[in-house]
Amino acid sequence: MHPDIHLTLHHARAAELRAEAGASRPLRARQAHHLRARLGWTLVEVGLRLATRPGTAAAAH
Image 1 (cartoon, one colour):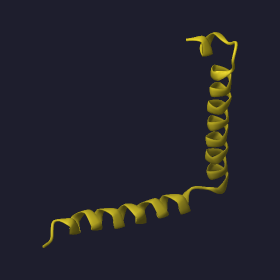
Image 2 (tube, rainbow, N blue to C red):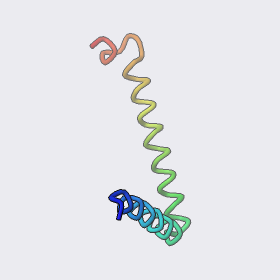
Image 3 (tube, rainbow, N blue to C red):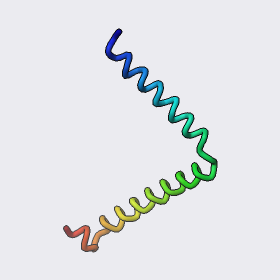
């Protein structure tokens, strides 16, 4: 048996499990997860803008 076959089988099984988990999660939970992710990235963007704005203490360091 080729050593890479185990890795290929692992990836295939992981994809199956991800698909099952995504299908079993209620729509409301998926929407909440998406909203939290968008909010998190928005906060990161705002923080980066504040930290790099000229004239702020963070930008002077």
